[in-house]
Length: 415
Image (tube, rainbow, N blue to C red; front, side):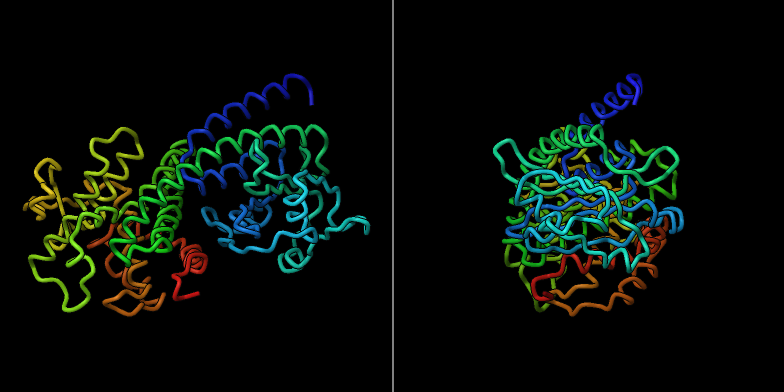
């Protein structure tokens, strides 16, 4: 690589490193780290893993060759599995030793090495894994956060090549910055988990798996919606980071609702109790008012409007409301004009679909779970009335990913 090309690449890396530092959601960050690392060294595939106890859990897998076989806008199946950290697995070996491993051909690993390459995935998919560079994602104090694995480097003509010394240097440099961004994102993630735990203590229906599913559904819906509407990539990066977190706060306002109402199972709410329950939208919004950031603004919009209807029907709430009009002390949302269509922020329209789908397809104290098929049909049936038809279209287009997310984040009773 000549000096000019090397300089251009380093400038691009510096720009991406700065962007990584601005990402707040841990999952969005992990996916972006994998994507950008592959771009830097022109690698066809890769995976990123995080440490969970004594296991490594895959968070994202990417494969350009497999992706090209899909229709435009489609994604590969959502991957979720974990395995014990041991020297027999390449990732496990790297995690234990804390050092990178560069393999020229995974099918020709010397017998003296403790690790082996598992060909099962290649046999199933018809893919050929050749070169592989695997490195630990370690903090300065030596704590292991995860493992990054980059597969099949390519030259300009697309031929598979090994990862040379320059590629090793670029990946290692980028990974160091990625770890700093991960440390910051983990702090944010821990703070969010504590806030959500408070809501779960108050309302057992607001479990962490439910919140995670809704946030991941929302990301998938938005990604497809953005593809359908030709949204610029830079805008997508900014929006999805905030949406992933904001979606988790959709029902955070329930912390301000009385236990007598919140935990009531039977009989169902009286009209007065229902009106008090509707106040959770405004209480949640007030937690982020006045907003100091795009995340605050989006969290406010999601909390406030995820129960408003696309057609402005009377069952939607709270409508066009001034937050200053509502008092938690009074406990009842004042009458207001309905809000409808594009007046409802996109983030709230997306979370509305994600939240209702998850509520339908999982058991609650007041109802049994619906089948996946019935849950999808109910969302589709309410397209154009309760829900934005463009959002429903995107939701139905990512059906397989939605189903994979359900398997990845089961309720405790479903384990």
